[in-house]
Structures are given as structure tokens and as C-alpha cells.
Image (cartoon, rainbow over all chains, first blue to last red; front, side, top):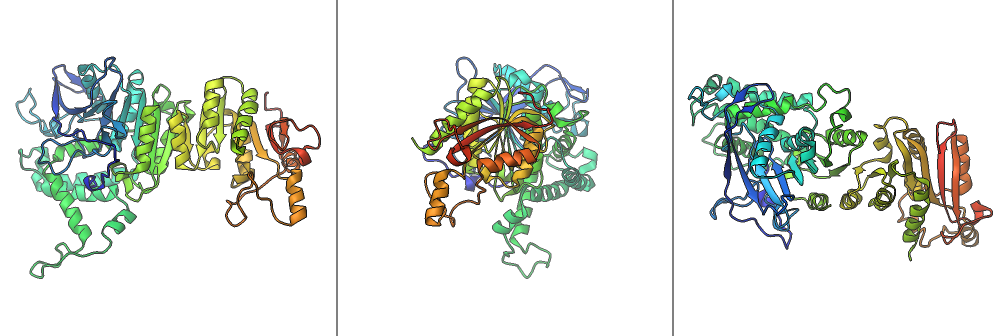
Length: 381
Length: 208
């Protein structure tokens, strides 16, 4: 993802959520996945910002994207170099205003940052799940978050908000629990992956699975297909940016080359940047989770067996804000328009807005005054 | 009171009177969603606005009005025939690109059209042109030719002739005088400053 920190220009009156702590919700009830398999219980890591009001009506859920996590605002310690991934959007008097809303930022089931997933111990076998972890779907993320909502005594969401895979979750929430969701905001999202999006994911998965260290998913903790995962990330990262965005940021600028190294070592700045993205990813992400998550994205399909996409939205009650970004070639403006049109054809309250930014799919993560105003207005109404 | 406020009030009044409660309404060139907000409150309509400008869409979001940011013509292609009870083209007719296609597509997706515009053949415009040889500049036509957005000013006669040529039937009209408030009773193409039409298709598809 783009370094959001350097782009986080704050509005003058806005404050910070400051130091935050994550919490772990432990559900001891069995969880049945969409594919029919079950696990005896699960843990879901989350953070909250702001206060739940007396009638529990001010709760907002934030769903993260593929490589994101529950830490979207504030810092965990004063020494933290970077705040959470959406810090410019969430906080006192920011668009997702923590003086008004109780914001819950939930991890995804199957993740590798504190929630139950492939790296967790299977209580039945006493060994890590690895590839035995049940096949995950976007709906599974949502049903696990629904248990979290019950635990937090939240009867309905004022809004469910997410970008990319987070947007898929927001859409799924509105369809799976129509009475639970008053508003959804889906940014840079899609009703289903294009063939091209699946193709890119497959290259990433193949790189992981061809790495000898993958060992059919049975690598030890601290080991694993680091090379494959780094390549997957480097490639995927290109799809999150844009031709123009890369040109503006790096152009053809070169690094100081060391003549003692071979001629195929890092030469251009963009190479260095991608290698850094790949290397930093392997320190924080699990390869099996990456396989599971990308598959859950590829399989997500709101069209399903419906004749037309609008039929999928027949039961939706939430008001929706769908936002596309002009330079997003992964989940294109057209795919976002299709979502909004389907909702409108189904007679729902929905708005489509398109923001002209150069940064590609990751535009939604970056500070943009237009997006600030849209979210702020939509949440206030 | 400035002209745009008067025009807005006139639209509110006339179009509100025509539209039945609970109708489905598409507003092409919806701006900040003020008319739709009014229709939602007063007539409980299901309304969708269309505007190409993000700032206008932000205004709609602020008002809780559903809106689609995009091109008027393209935005209609997804809707089946007669999906809307009304398509409103108010104060945008002269700014449209592909005007004929928009009107024909609007007549496809809507049972009825509400079309409002300022009458370019209004006598003061004619007099000004005849007397000075310059195109008029006033509150209604504020910008000189080198600054204004491309527009297609249209007169009452021209529009009515277009409708009859294209199988569109004017079912009702409100001609307003130069003050845009009082009714204009005679020679509308000369004396009316503002007009709002209720237009349907001639084949009898349209119900009133």
C-alpha cells in the first residue's frame, strides 16, 4: 500500500485519536464457514475509537483491504513511526469523526495479525492449520464481524465502510444483514473480479507455491516462501498504482550504482521501491493467508446466479455511497458505476461519485479533500 | 431576489404540481439536488439525480439525495423503457451535448418529461440584437461570447416544432412572462421569458 503517512495532511481543527490498543474478541461458539466446514471457535482482533452512545446507535465498522489490518488510526506507542493506515480519515473532527461515532476497525477472519487463520493452532490436531484452514469467503469475514458486533452490544451499524476488499465486505454486510446496516460506503470496489484481476492474483499465488520453501503450505513459523511472497507483493503492488502515478513518483530516476555489484542489481528507483515493498511485506504477512485472501477475492461474485446484478441488491436496505477513482485500473470506475447502477435499478438509495486522482487503485488510501467532503457529508446525513 | 432563485421556485411549483406522489423521477443536470430534495419531501418520490460535476454530487450527498456522477446520455442507457415516471430536464436543455439523443433517450426511459428553459426569442433579446447588433448580456445571459460555456439557446417555437417532428407530444405547458412569475397569455414565443413543458410520447404510450 502507499505510504499514507506522508500524505496525511490534516485539517486544522482535526485532532488525533492518539494512543490506541488492540483487543481480541474470543468467540467460543463454533463457526461454520460458507463452504460448510467448521472450526470450534475463533479470535478476531479489533480496535475501537470514540465512545458508544447511550442507545448504541453511533457505531461505524471499518473493513480493511487485502494487506491491511485492524490498526487504522492512532499509534500503539509514542515511538511508533507511522499511525494506522487510515489515520487521516479517522479521528476527532475528521470525516469519520470519533467525537460523534464509535468506530470499530475489525481484522478479517483468516488473517495473520492476531485473528484465527492458517497460522493458528488447530485445537483438534494440535498443529497449525496451514492449508487445512477452511476455504474463506468475503461472507465469512462478515459473519465473524457480526459476532463481534453482538459481543460489543451493537444492534446496527450507522455505517459500514471499506475500500477494495473492504468495500466488498461493506457490500456483503448490506446484503447478508439488511436490517443491521443503515449506510455503506464502498470505495474502489467491485461486484466481482475481472479476468485480469484474477490473472494477477494467480501470478502471485503461483510465485508463492513454486517457492520450494512453501512446502505445500507446511512451512514452520518464521520460515516460509519469502521469495514467492515478495514477488507476489511486488507484482500486486503495481496493480494498486498507475502508470502516471509511478511516472510522477519515480520516472526513470536512478540510484547510485555500485560497480562491484552485478549489472542486474537495483538500478532504477522504481525497482528499489518495489523490492522494499516485497521485503517489508514478508515480515508482516503470512503466505498461506495471502493465498486464502486472494482466492476469497477472486471468488467473490455478487452476480452469482442472478440474471442481472440489480437482482442481487433486492434485499438491501442500506443507503449506499459508491466511489470510483479515475486512474484505478484494477477495480475500474466502470465496475464501480455498475454497482451504483445496479442499486439504483433495484430502487435503492445510492450515489456514485468519481474522484479524479492519479494514484490508481490505492487512491482511496490517500488524503484527498474531495473524498473527505463526500464521506463527511454522507455520514452526517 | 436573483434570477436563479426565482427560476428554482418556479420549477418547484410547476413540477411539484405535475408529479404524482410516489413517482420515480430522474433529474438530468440535478445540480446540488435542491429540486429533488424538495420533491422527496413534498411528494415522496424516488429520485435520482445525474450531474457530471463532483462538487454538485457532494451537494446531493449532503441533502441525502441519490445521485449519479456522469454523463446525462450514458447514465440513461442502463434503464429499461419507462423505468421512470418523470425525467426532468430543467435549466439544462441548452447546455446538453447530443441534445436530440438525450431527449430521445429521456423519452424512452421516462413516461413523461418536464422540460424547462428560458425562451431565447423573448422580445427583449430580439430587440437588443436588432438595435445593437450584439448578443444580449444580462443576468440571464451573463457572459460575453468568449467566456461563456457553449450553449444552444432555443425558442418556444423551435422546441414545439422539434417535439411535433420527433413524435413527442406537449401535454401541458406553463408560459411565464419576462419576470418569470406571472402567466404569459399571448404570443408566447415573443412575450414569454420562461417556459416549462410536460412532454410525453405521441403514440399514446404516455399516461397522464
